[in-house]
Amino acid sequence: QVPLVESGGGLVQAGGSLRLSCATSGSIFKGSRMGWYRQAPGKQRELVATITSIGSANYADSVKGRFTISRDNDKSTVYLQMVSLKPEDTAVYYCNALNVYKNYWGQGTQVTVSS
Image (cartoon, rainbow, N blue to C red; front, side):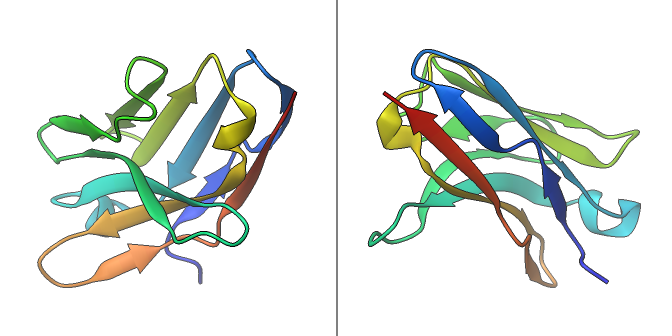
């Protein structure tokens, strides 16, 4: 059973928007810092945004002002709203859940931004 299930990736033109979702179990979600990371071809995985269990968010400089991370505690789901997308945002986006016990990763969802 996959602990984190991402959805919402796809192909979009530059300037467009996408919303990624990541659903998990309540036992994982509660108390976890949730985050989104991305990995472009030939590059290392990098942090995009994180949000703590109490809603404190942190963003990579490259996405500040364009991406918004949020969490729905009732649905045990974290979202990444992406606007003003750029070709350099093209990557596989991975959901992450980090707590004191374990570090969980999703399987990734592809985001492709065409110029």
